[in-house]
Length: 199
Image (cartoon, rainbow, N blue to C red; front, side, top):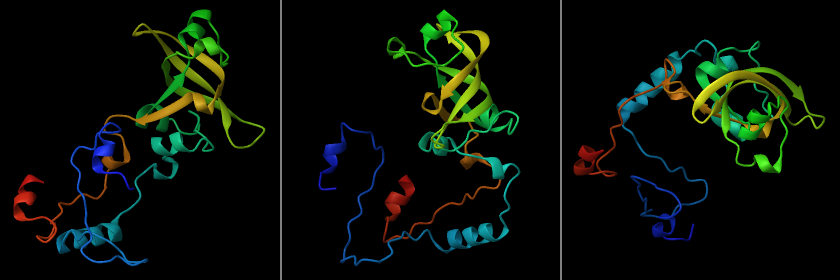
């Protein structure tokens, strides 16, 4: 928190950024907000009063949740044939050497460290680990070699750390039917008119 903005130049690319400076002391418990204007507030209030959960919301898990919490059980194809495949992409670290050797049981080997991630077509089964904090999975992979698809293989004993998830294009929760969208009318004291035209 004590570093200047230039400190982050080589850490990440922030794009358009704003620096807020307090013009008075901020006491513990003070709420700091940006007023988007009365039209936005009215639209949000109306949205929350009439919003209904879309079909399938009860089983939806975001890729961010799955990547961040390995104790969340990934639904099998029989439990939910929409989540993996139609809503999110699942990838499995299954190295080239394993493909070439015809291995069907996931195992970590030091020589496999540069293995690529393969597309998961289905989560077939899961088995809880003795610790109760995660699972091993049986998955159906479409193995890729040198950018070309090969046969589909069933791989067993896949640990949770070998799987990762990302939203399919236009399938993240921000694209769900009925999400709230409304223009923001930011007051002049926050951004002058010249800035509003740019934003």
